[in-house]
Image (tube, rainbow, N blue to C red; front, side, top):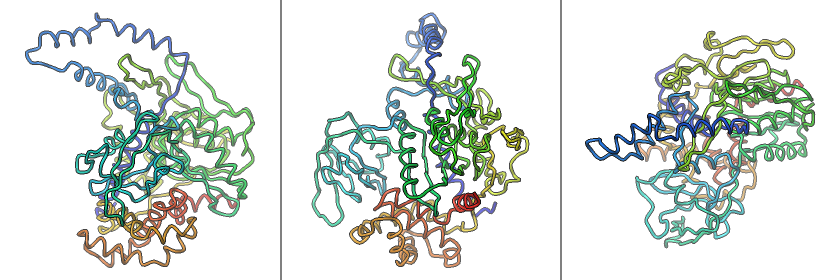
Length: 539
């Protein structure tokens, strides 16, 4: 891999690894049969006679300096659970609500999507029907005050913003808003309400008779959202489906099972789970699915994990469809969440997932040492696995057989049937700079802000793309980047032109139309989507 590409890819990897690790923390599987075992476990360890309690009491009573025993206990709990495996985790009480919200299907708040730019909260979109829309907040507004206090500067971050804007239903928050074209500070008092959390980003016709559904996680409402998407696409003429699970870090196993059931005839094994104190559980299809005879392609990549891998593995092992992309993450551990008395919780690994052919998709790890595990994706990148199929370590692959006797591979993630490499032909030092410093995104926001009235005339992504195709976006962006300190390099700009333009157009479109305007433009020349359409055309 050329050195000039390394910076961009490392930063992309770092950001996405952070996202997938968070996704792995929130993956869970509820099993009532284990309640008694956990109850006895915590009862035994709650005694003041156990060694941990003894040590803490001695420190509190006799240690030479004053020590905050509560903080010490939190640190010990975090370290203790983290030593077990890469996905067991201790969740402090103060973080539990935020962590749980991602999968619960809704949360209470004001109903905006935001980003922090130049130390200021920028409203990217206002959720239709939500509390903010009802009082008149607009995409492009800047939140500069919260409850009569200035809320800008380097001290703000996503967590602090969430804590300020989210809250119980029917509570109020007062916002000071700066709006483009309005000199005075605008003040809105918003009553918080229930805000839906969508897990299906988009469902749209990507080709004649072919519909694409992109699923970003397996949450509480994912299956119902998925059914709505399928019904919508069928109404629009879809008879073939692309299920995009790229960068989907998992979630509730039950939702994945329900979705897989839509594609399998009765009696086929979907997944089984098993652990030391966790009896084998088999999930099988019941034959009631709505797409049993529809051709299907599943898209995965190195950030598809957990329930995403179960979905891809079930489709692959039952020879039901084609899996396209790159080897998946390799997260096949089942967690169960149990509450602790102070409002905190632990998510403890209790079993492993196995695909129908018997594959454990969990990649190797060592108890008490997660460093190598956490570096796995980066090491795969260095080894060239994202760019050539032959770079996958043979030691990481074990042969299994599908229902028809076809060979598939396990031992760490799902190996796709058709490999799609990452495209680095457009990577240049110039592109590295404008991506690393977020100039693409910032320009798109500024452009939208300046041209919102004209852009808002275009009601779907096709009309928006047609309009943007006739605008001098590249020239304007290069000028903008130069003003931000990135010198124009014509040869490199030419090489990266396609990458820059597709993302500028997609970002601008999303600022007006949301995800319905973003993904169809971003995927217009996507290699995996193109290959999926090509494969389904043969069916």
